[in-house]
Image (cartoon, rainbow, N blue to C red; front, side):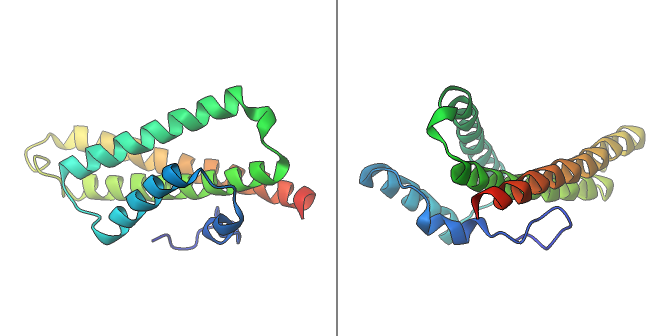
Length: 153
């Protein structure tokens, strides 16, 4: 669950979801089943991390292709909904990166107790910088979303 941050707008993507365009019944059922599975049994461990990363990468690759080759099918309302979703995705990535940095610094991961301190400090510094820059990216997405809201509402 995300805590409020300066880079999050007041817009709730999930409140917009019921009014959003839907897939055909069979495809929507797969999405709904997947969402239910994640909510009811999120699981932990390396296999779950690999599976979630795989699903996220598939989705982001497809989204990138869609926005490249089918941009003319989207209107400003859909663009605002997309920016709201991307902001939320970026906020979750930001918090995840920041947690990884904190856990690396605390040597919370298996094998970090034996790892050279200099390498872990440099890794933590890189992750901390990525987390800070990630906040800036989310902030720019928020700004673009708020500007589009002025055109669509």
